[in-house]
Length: 328
Image (tube, rainbow, N blue to C red; front, top):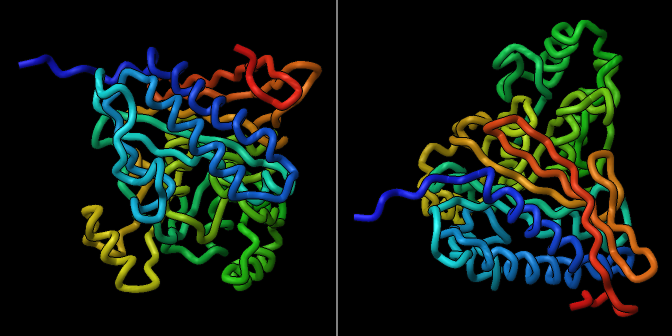
């Protein structure tokens, strides 16, 4: 009987950064060119190629979607050399495809990895989300509270007025009432068009980003990725899956979910130590976007390890020809 291989997060972290960088570099030529599908496909292909170089027995638990809708990096796909430790992988090859196509802020590539069974297998449905940064009492706010109470408690814990708080919310019609209720407390709102993983990550450093909380409905896969980021960076998060029809409930049941009303905490979504890498595609509050110079393309990546709480920012420069092809 072979001994069980341990999740060597330190050894795997640099490889994970290379995966994120490869996806960002592949999408670089599509920034501002109006074709979000091409940008996403380029990132998917590059991320998959790089993942398959890692000595892991990887299973994608958060990916591009169900197998019939995603030809590559679909939920359940096996990646890696199939040697080494068994791991769960959550990824978004290009978080903010529309942001990339329009050259708008905060598009990034992002991938997280943990031991097998550590990452919630969330179906591709909606999730109601609430996140705040580190340094607050545990369970200070919850999804079961009205928005006004959340902000009152958050302001009291921070030692300020609700008028001093800023909440990040996706700009969607479904959030019209939420936005009105938040503004009625005096709090400000930063509306984002896409990229709610980055939106949640902003909560971890309000002094720099100006964001104190994240609220609203977005994708469940993005919610799990955001929980992975907070596991590394600090902060609290809750999410509740939302279902529009029986097909979505069926997908949840296939993923092993039977309690459709459950509120998941960050620790429910990420059940062990994880590593996470994210690379900027367009400029944002967290990461600098891709830069092109004479004969090279440059990226900035943040590499996170929850075991140590470490955050490492790295710059990678790749030599390219005039057609953006890497020089061999």
